[in-house]
Length: 93
Ligand SMILES: [Zn+2]
Image (cartoon, rainbow, N blue to C red; front, side):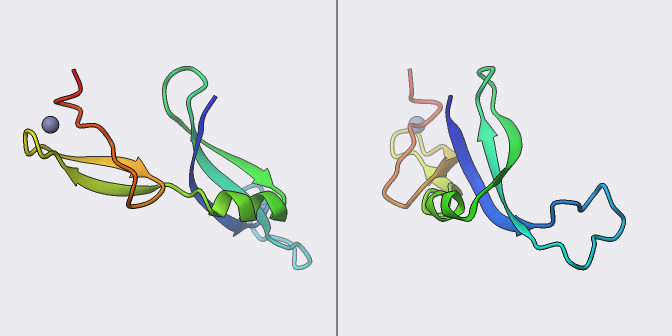
């Protein structure tokens, strides 16, 4: 099971279920990620503690545009940093 972190941010736990969030509530860390439980990527969220939030923030994936040197195809992929490279979907096989 792989999780691809898209975003780690603070959010109010009762936003959505309440029209106005209570004054005393503090925002908690929320993890937005893609999950491949069924073999398909599905968007998911979970509440996390501040320690886990700090770790996950180091591994946030970003959308980057790539140009294949072989066939000049322009495609997008999720990467952790600029050193990471993704195989061209056309030249793969
Ligand atoms: Zn290619």
